[in-house]
Image 1 (tube, rainbow, N blue to C red):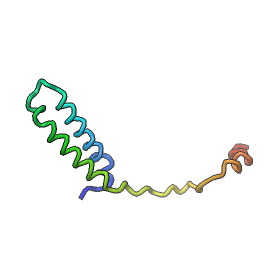
Image 2: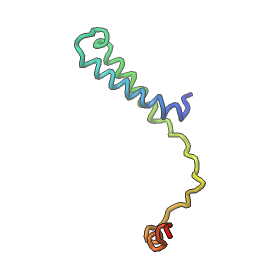
Image 3: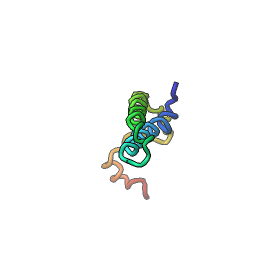
Image 4: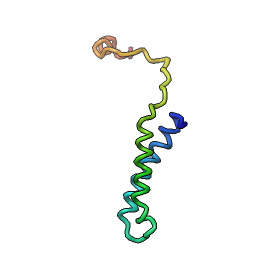
Length: 83
């Protein structure tokens, strides 16, 4: 099973990189091996990206200093915390 942190850090960006690499392999005419397998590389990247998108993002830790939504008018009236 893919962890949420691994998915966000490596698996999702890696899948996008595979899709881009497949497009680059398709566009270059010099190396026949890469050109012949470009669609396979793009397909593997597309399947990986589809899996990556369906894994929820990591849980965000609650910030202890966060006081919630603050009204701009109240902040300006109080001097914005500056005395």
